[in-house]
Length: 336
Image (cartoon, rainbow, N blue to C red; front, side, top):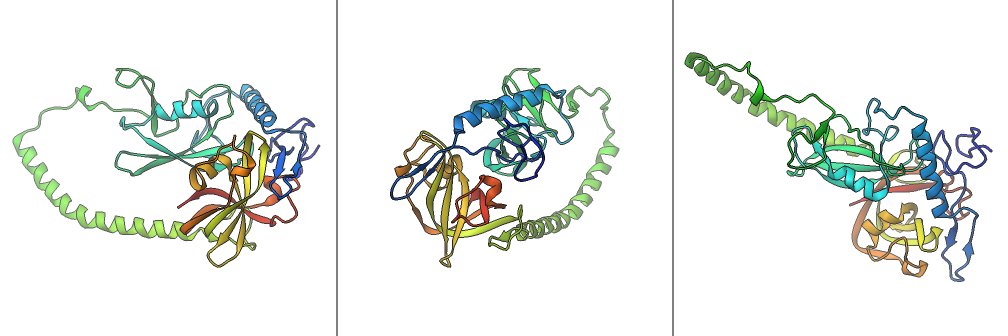
């Protein structure tokens, strides 16, 4: 059997391509139309989840299970956890090197070459609401990883001395006996130097903030307006006024994703592939994976919403997609 995306040979019983992560066999698909017709395939969502977890565990057993370069900081080298509960437990124990607690927000998910299953993207923020960093998690392992990414520490028992693990060297100034008392003359000279540096630092800080702002704008400019001329894997955005669920993917009571028609302010229609989890978080909080197909109704927003994601070929997200779905679609990641 060959993968229909990268065309490499894979085992006959594969669910996902071991090289590019492409889904080999379809889930059971429910087409939402007036007649309520169901198009069923042999592979159910629960079957896929069970096999995906077993494949991840098997692939992890064949590795040395030690963190590699950029561990947890790229989609191709994710942190492995055990389902949603394991992910929440792992994130709750992850602190900054200087022992600051982080709040986490899931930005979306992506596929990565050589990784079985989707990889979730999480953004960590400090108490000041400043972004500290982004990590990548694959939640289909049998247990949580013990390792931590560079720049973080793991607090296993908050408030207990000696209960942390970190990926970087820590320096304890209080226990450094090499610190010695300085003379008054040295302290006076230090104050003068400090004042001079302060006068230099203020305008320099303003310049850096201005430069960072320009870089931030330029990074946003790299995101392209979504249209059929986009190349696959382009970072794209689209301004929409409504979501209309058309096709639900998964088994009744265990939906995985949904194809939606999204109307733009200009009156055009874009096809969007969105997970049920993201649909509930961003579009309609009243539905879930266990809702009936009748519960998924068109949602119209009072103001224009901007959705962000990645341009993908429809056949890379679903084998043999429906004929009326555009060739290039938007793989949803977030909305603001």
